[in-house]
Image: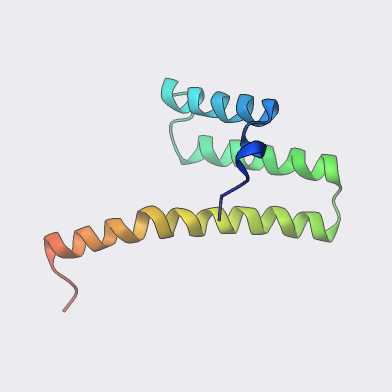
Length: 92
């Protein structure tokens, strides 16, 4: 889902943005759900300001947020749940 072409990842602005976010997380500036929500919403709002508050753009922003949440669940939450079941046993 979050996979973009390698050459697109190397675009200077994309590199700067991802490095800035990584630094903010590593330094503790982005430290909790509220901080992440702020960054996500800021990016979504700026995207809509640039590309317009049309239905398709708003729908794309919503889909990207939902798809990202689904990817976090698929890659991190589900495997963590599997570990917890092995450690603690399943619901009987």
